[in-house]
Image 1: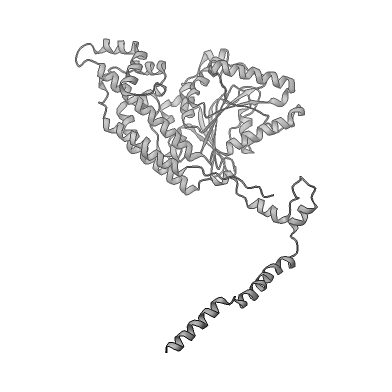
Image 2: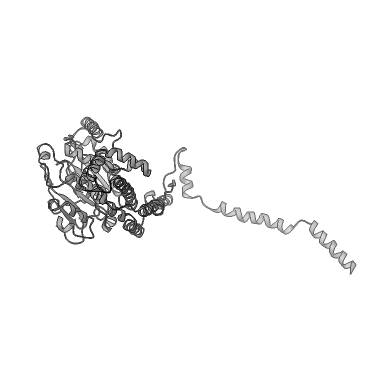
Length: 479
């Protein structure tokens, strides 16, 4: 047994000392099989094109890389939310507003000082585009270029033709014109709160339904009467034009102010309208219309004069972008600016096409602005109410508070740690406060409602913003 064991160990040592011949023979065969297809494979079309192309230039496109370029996703497509996701966000916003924001609005009398409470249609409505400007600047013609057709009640002319507010909407039935009283009663339309402006306004308001317009399937257009000037503005209107514009501006997703290249004067009423739009400067876009009727030199002077006028009226160092265009269906009068007008029109159309895509994000933004405004208003009423005496001298004390309202705003901001930038306009708030007979009649501030609103801003809104977060990816060069 010892002899057999020693023999086995000796055999094992000899096997380990010998090189593995089979592996040495197999390695070259494996390498040959690995290299053989590379020599047998014909050159690709891209390699031939790259070899034939001059040095320093990219190879010409081939069917392969053209298909690759078509498959590269666009950044705008990556940021697009589905209809189900937008509907889910809208439902969440409606619940947050109804449960945690509206109770404080009602308790503090927010509707008397600012705007009426929101309803479900305000969240579900399509993006709204508000058009403003003096008469005969081309508002109706601009709408017609978007809709690509006429509608019931349309009138275009050099004289003041549009004397009413018109909502141009998409309809499922035949074209029809809905009177303002009936339109304000429809629960599925975002116009119910307009009934608070009375019959004088509702008789000057109607809705035009158009079937088969792709643009109206995504947005709603609001055509407005021309802003008055001269003797007409002294005659006035039989409804509060400024308040109506303010109501539409709060709910609009985009505000376009049109100017005529031959009429750059800004009347007092237009000045008041522009001041009303100051809290919504992020929505405002200015359009210099009928720019084809002047040559390049005149257009440069007109553009500079308009920028100077806007800076003087808005009293800001920076003015919103001014688009230049011509939107009538006739040939251009001066074709030397045709390329410029085409590029400006394309930029404006891209801005308007992005409105449905970012509708959910703007609804969240508007709810945050309203929530902050409601919170500040509730603290203002609470602070003024605490300054009132319990029994005698209420009227005199209220008059003194209204007289030094600016100082009271500062004291309220310091006491409750509120930013002064969120406080309302001083003159408008004073005017509305003069209509209140006794400030002490307001309900006592419920601090739990304020805490609920703070939770909305800190937690709920943050979660919704995460859902609306825009995921962008760099586009690879297909060539």
